[in-house]
Image (cartoon, rainbow, N blue to C red; front, side, top):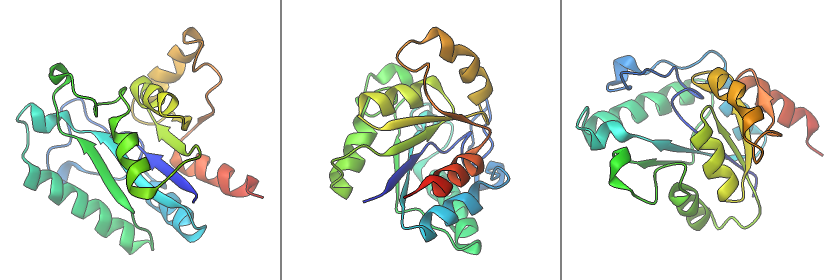
Length: 182
């Protein structure tokens, strides 16, 4: 199975320091939906693994999150794409759960559901995305959208992640991945 795990905010859609709390606030990054559709056409399973601490903080409720994800799926369908799964951590940072990245709980859920044994690609824009991917045995990839530019500047100081591939955005990573497939 060819599997790509994507963070949501900052990779697929524009991020906000005030959180994405409603479908109206969810806005796709140019090229991200078409990139997911290209992965789908190439036979990749594509899933989202996202910290959604706004739930734990009481900033929005599960129905609002469902509506955000419905909008994302509808916009993906409009360009011929889809997500095979959406996994998220609903906890606040202080909850100390095993699913909040940089912990690996979301990756373990994905591996269990899709019976994945070998490493997968994991695309994120934050250090915790990269750390979770690496700890879970995935191949971390950084995009410079969202918090990615700030994360990119910090990579040289992190010896375990300093060789992480970096791309301008999800579309650039997908173009490279699909052009180098054997």
